[in-house]
Amino acid sequence: MSPIIKGILTYVPVLNARRQNHATSGGANTSRYCYSVWLRHLITAPYRYGFKITRARIGELGPGDSIGIRLAALLTGASRYVGLDTVPFSAKADLEPIFEELV
Image (cartoon, rainbow, N blue to C red; front, side, top):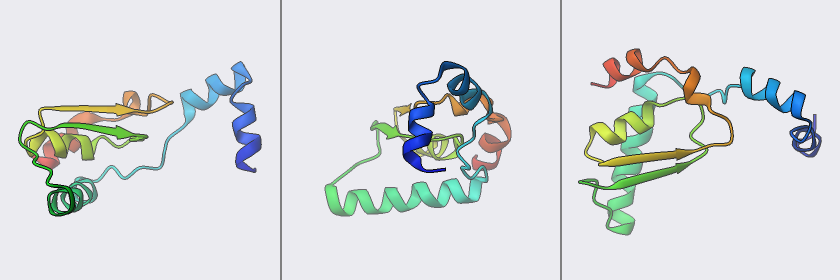
């Protein structure tokens, strides 16, 4: 289905409610993947932009259903994380196993 039609269907309340209740972003829920993605950002940002993780406030647009990257950010020194998404994916995520693996 084309992205335009999918976007139009989000304006139909019944269909949009169903999409929000059953959707997943297909995000990776393995700690290894999430940690490696976060480390790539952590290595690249200071080099290019002078970013320092200590007490940093991290914002992410469209984090999806995997909370591993945000947990990795907080575990490595970020003071705050805010993820903005149109669908509350992380409400469905099983947080404890991902956290335990990252620690």
